[in-house]
Image 1 (tube, one colour):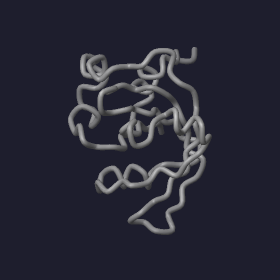
Image 2: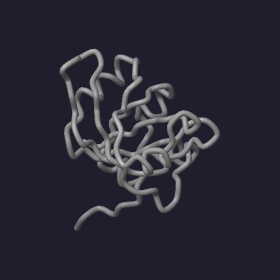
Image 3: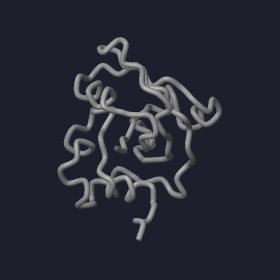
Image 4: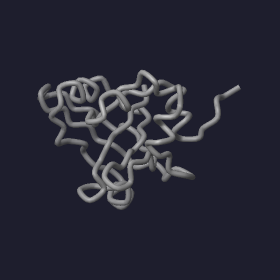
Length: 130
């Protein structure tokens, strides 16, 4: 399943992930976001969304591993993907009917959001396979 991960670029940006190649995604405290992290599996696709002044989906990544040895603090290792050809703004996301019922727009403070395949394609610009 694809997911969207929100990050404040002044704290940790996609450029930081790109430079480091991999990182452990942590610091999440919201129970719903933690539940979403516990549902992740290696190989899941990720979209990196930068908050703050950016407010756009900016890049892709993938789940490298998930450590659930501490259920209250799952440790998800992610690998950098590529910058999107064009950032997708929050305004564009909100104007798309694909996101009408999405926690991305309905629960703005949720930092780990599941995406449908259609939402993932919308954000990444990847065309549906024939």
